[in-house]
Length: 538
View 1 (cartoon, rainbow, N blue to C red):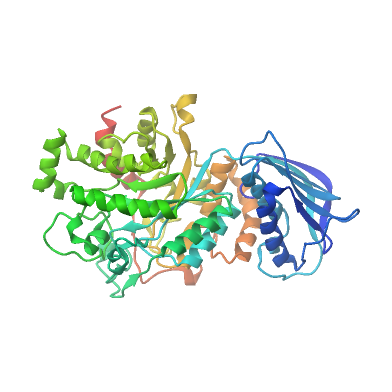
View 2: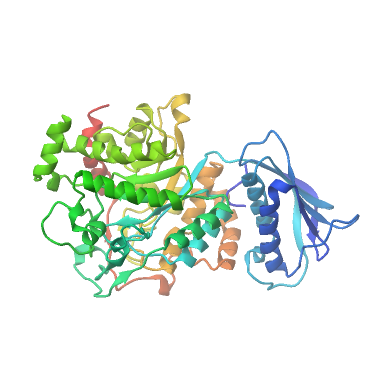
């Protein structure tokens, strides 16, 4: 099973699912019952809708007080299966574990095998180590069509991941319909061309790229995810990474010249201005976002915002004088706080990247610490909740091995073993501080991932290793590798084009798209440069 359960006890014998097997559930778990009947019914060909009868096998979902919200107990005996939980998430995760105890063909959408469907007798007592087990998918750089995104929701559910962070806006594309400002998608959802491979090679494809989700598309995604106990966290990135918005509405920017939607990667120089009208514009955007996404958290970015335009802007300088601010970093914190306060006033929790540490993280903001343990530690000690997402450990767009056979190799090598060994909690925190580490988030940034097939290759099986790191924290890589051999058969049944341990298949290579690989030492020096000003505070 992946992720490994907290505790497992083996029994004797096995339970056999037959045409007569009844699925029953206490009322709080009726949605999980329907899901389980659907997936097992399609794979086995059995209706699984019979009424419970004496002597007939049954799978029961039963409510039990005293368990945590995501905790479950699973007991498999020759005469039946019992899943106990106090809340729907726990029952759902128990059902996911039951599915993994079956033959990998249980993950197919139609019957492909003859013979019995047996589950070994076992007892499982399980609950997650962390409450935030996230995956960021960047749909701004390369758009992921709705059905492909729904498929990733299902893949997250298989791995008991529970937060989908959607990076919806960036320089290269705006992906969410905002009815008050239609040009955000009319103009901002499409770019003229994209780089081929790493930008250092200066090659572009000359082909338009784009797409966006309507508000109803996103409501569908949110509901589909919620049924699988996954919360969707939308990100509207501010004040940097906004060239697509500025291209649609030039008055949002700092220049007197029109811009096009970004056609290259990297940190763009074009950022929002600090006018009252711009603040009002994005508060209106966020109000529509809140109407679509009912979850607790909303991400407002705050990362990688060059200050050149603000340093040259009379308007920005006047705003700093008016507010008594001493640096552009403080101006960025003030700007972002207009939106974090807006979210707090509406009962939501703002979420932002760790660059805000440089000017002070706004009150009530949960920090996504992507620049290493230093940023996570500083945020925790400043009293903020933290989700760790270190780019050199959990950015799954980084190459998986040395050599140029890896498709579009960028960054340093992040192996399957590296991800499996990841521990979310920085060293040196006391018990109260450790509780502020909510969990971790892996990230699929898509500058160099231009198709769902390549997304699969970069995500799996490393995402399976990440799921184990944040669910159970199991650290025996050899034992994980043994279980992964079976789990890859499940992934194959689900149609996942994962990276083989021996390296990419010929069709998974990208000789047309050269990368820009870096060593770990180079990445370390880059990280040290990014955080040098913060290091001086410790």
